[in-house]
Length: 174
Image: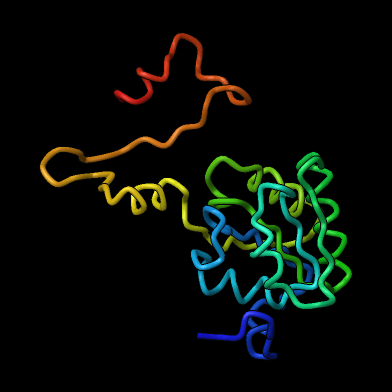
């Protein structure tokens, strides 16, 4: 397929854009469930922001030897975005890793707003959602023919409360 630890110049060039941060989904944690694009970015990035213990170390070893790893697990999204932007503005290839997908239950959009306000562009490399991985692992369909037309993905309402007067059951029935 391709060498885990090599970053060929043509691979690197696809990611190089002036002052740019790549928001990268790393799926449910298994290196063999990374998208090809995420795998290539990780192997080429100069700086990799990751969510600490939430990230499988087997994914982080895919990086090039001199890549800087930054654990941003305990850094506020606004501050983290400023750090990412600083490296990108300095000409570094920056990967901001997210477990699952950057667009599902993550601070990606908040961080992107900060970056764009400060003149740093960004792009998203989607990841495989753990919901899809779990369905595949269980060999179940999320939308079996003739019975289900949709499914709901929601987080436990701890950090993001449900709208007043709604319950989890209400949300799932809509």
